Length: 452
Image 1 (cartoon, rainbow, N blue to C red):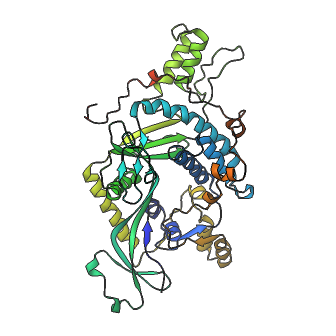
Image 2 (image 1 turned 180 degrees about the horizontal axis):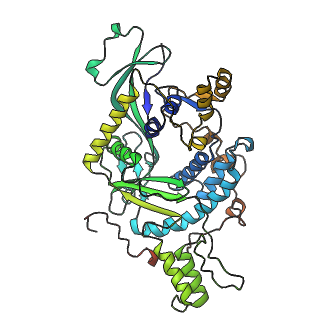
Image 3 (image 1 turned 90 degrees about the vertical axis):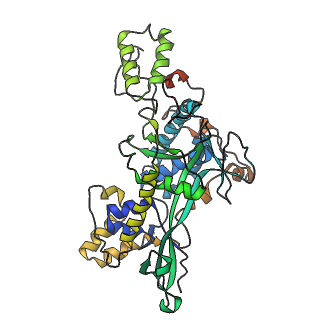
């Protein structure tokens, strides 16, 4: 008899199902359940995991005391020959991004008062960190996994293959009619990057994204936002106030550019911010008004392309869903699951120009269309099936993280920042930011009709 206790689907599974049935057939736990052996070789996914781990530690236990030290530890967890191509360049980029994040977050969070919520891991009860202190029985609500039962069950044979689906317990046949098959439930699984509580005592889901550029057009229809807000209430037993979509663009902030004669440049293509430029103008001229007109005009331009939510490098957007939208989200999940479990579902490919970078099974797809058995077998040598008793969050690299206590036991310490940072490659912006709190004027964090 098979040892499968449950199947899981995730938002990523649903997106893949809509994107390409063949890719979904290869990866989904309901089907092939295949994963690449060894280290993730897609540099974008690898880098995203690095940023997430850095944030997880910094806004959680903060064992490293600085997200850049946590980023260093993540990099050290991989043997040199297992690092994906481009890892070294992304290491320098990550250090620069996190350096700027430290000053950006401090300035913007002064307005919102976000603190990482505390959670009882046994009961899933959340506690306001503004009122309750951390104890041994409570954890910081970072990387919060949830696994929610769906109203769906499948009949599975000894080889783990699904034969029939049931969407009501009343429809499940008696054991004597299952013919050596077992009934397995289906769950919805996901991981929330961070749960925060604002200064008004309201709970939010905070999610980190890294990308080439910030995208706000999709927020109203983003299915992960909807699914996580739906799952939050079921898992934690309370309604979340909203979702914070924090985007970090993959660019390094630079000091305002200067010409050969030492004057500040008005080049609009330079990768700097309004607050950094303003401070340099004040350093040079004493006040902004004393600066040349062209610099004042350039400063106004920099202000026009920024907003209270952020700048071109980091921004956060606050998103809500109505109760009706939450109900619709569950309907969408169940509707897609019905389609996933169709008996005669033919999983054809949906090729696009993105396949070259976003599909780990592209070569397999080509081999399948050629009916090339040798190429298919060669490709499959690099893949293995995920364990059926896990929920999709196994990170083998975590075992190799050089935690401070682990290094201390070996008589070592985490290097100082000056050793970790490549000072000639990335700008070091400390918490003593030159950005003024006045730069956030106009952003009143209420998001509704609540009174302070």
